[in-house]
Amino acid sequence: MQIRSLISAAVVLSLGLAASAAHAQTVSLNFDDVLPGTVINNTYAAQGVTFAGVAPFFTDVQAIDTVSASAPNSLDATGSEVTISLIGPFSGGATNFTIDLVPDPLGFGSPNTSIQFLDGLGNVVGSLNNIDQTVAQTLLFNSALFQKVVLPGDAYYDNLKVGVVSAAAPEPSAVALYAVGALPLLGRVLRRRRNG
Image (cartoon, rainbow, N blue to C red):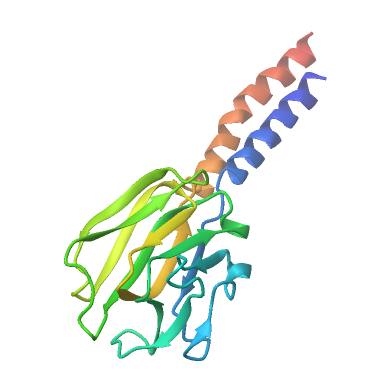
């Protein structure tokens, strides 16, 4: 019985180490897979991302053809702020966020605004501050889990990437070392069984 328990424990340990290596989940959107002017509120819902504008300005968010060095289409947030909600595969939240800010060619945009990151209850868990919307730039955020992102209006946004960083996966050699480390214990149990 002790041998079975020991073998079971070793198998559970090995499986537990392998399972602790949660897979990283990432989605990248450049909005070029839709025609310019397309409302994209729920277009990417299957990938875990939805968009909403703010009433009374506009609630429909569009992909707009912009003169961008990065891509032809961008997310249009020139009418009001846009809320990005994470659902489906990201319903537990994300930890990484990257987006390119494309200034409004008409000159709108604040030299000092911020992006807010919220949890599922609407509490602010982080922010990117002092963003100059008049300058093209890539914005990066890594933090605790967030489920919503509020992008300030008066700019376009492109090349959105959202991801979850999981616990580091154990190296196969580490799993093998754990298994080898359990062998002396297995030997002791076998010797006791023979001698007893």
